[in-house]
Image 1 (cartoon, rainbow, N blue to C red):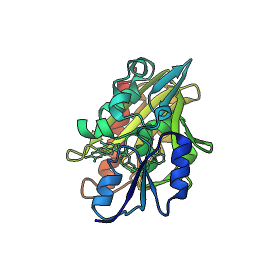
Image 2 (cartoon, helix red, strand yellow):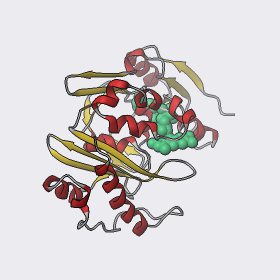
Image 3 (cartoon, rainbow, N blue to C red):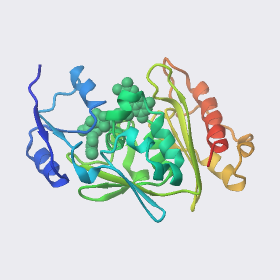
Image 4 (cartoon, rainbow, N blue to C red):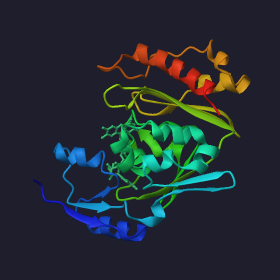
Length: 265
Ligand SMILES: Cc1cc2nc3c(=O)[nH]c(=O)nc-3n(C[C@H](O)[C@H](O)[C@H](O)COP(=O)(O)OP(=O)(O)OC[C@H]3O[C@@H](n4cnc5c(N)ncnc54)[C@H](O)[C@@H]3O)c2cc1C
């Protein structure tokens, strides 16, 4: 075993201080990605700074049209929040479809977006909703936050505190899950926002989450699944792997967008 020092942070300031003092520390939230990575010896942090007990980083709050979710809020608590279900059911529904019950009861929204797995679900919602990621140091727009596959704009030791977005008029998420992992083969979050239609795709892009501008243009003219019939989705820039090639994923992008728009509430 590699030796790792475990610290339980009591506040955001405490987490920032502990991680700053460590040699090669890592923040720990739900541990659903980091712990398996350590077990596989792909990471060996000198220190683990656990943010899961920081009260300010928990819960969903709604003020007017603004929804704020604490970074350490588990997927299960996002999925089960009645206010969020009423205000933006698409995000609650997305959280309910992540992994399995064990993953949902430990894994957190902050850990998920910090990890920015190209097949993770939350990045699609964050990008489509033009969410703002608040850290201990600044606010980052989702469009600037997701930089590429497993890459974000976070500086070393920067702590995500919360995520906020304006509730859209309508929104829904449709995912074609990998039958083994439940990660997205393709997942599409579609939203009708004050800035128009927004469609963001996860699981398909070879550089992570992206917006599908042609679909957005079609939906701006006519918000209905039928409006997407004439939109061509090419396979350039899409992932090919053992689960499906780029042409297969291109078709799934179209099918999942139709399903998301049809399911919008
Ligand atoms: C079997 C299985 C199935 C899964 N299926 C899905 C799925 O269907 N869809 C999906 O989207 N995900 C899926 N996941 C991933 C899951 O959603 C995890 O919750 C997510 O990957 C990481 O969240 P976490 O809270 O566990 O983060 P951790 O594992 O604790 O941390 C992950 C990374 O984020 C960093 N980090 C954590 N919190 C913060 C913070 N507040 N600020 C800055 N950096 C931070 C950590 O340092 C680490 O680098 C699955 C995982 C497993 C094990």
